[in-house]
Length: 100
Image 1: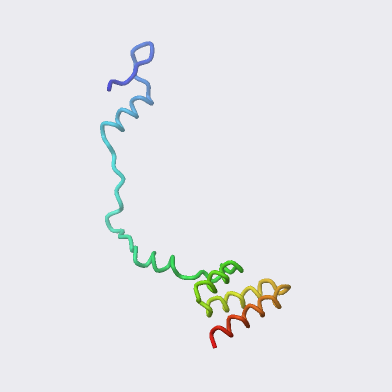
Image 2: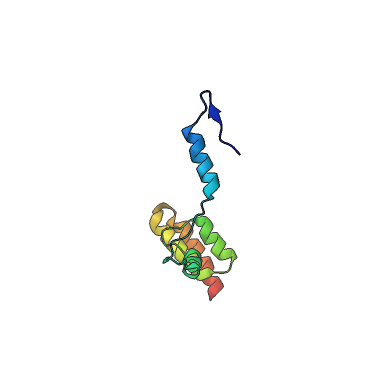
């Protein structure tokens, strides 16, 4: 593919850049000394984030029968939302009765 010319026969600067790019076929390469550690990334992505606590998360833990995690989540929610602490305490009681 020949570069386009502008009226006087000269090649536009943009066309030169594009043509050089096409001819060189550059490839993106990872730095040689850097290796990805996918195992640790997978492990860290599955770990619980301490700052992420919601009622929905607590309900999901309950549905998954992860009662200890649900209880911990409700306890954190009690501190975060003291106005709903009675509700959360009731949820904790129900969960503790399922454990015992």
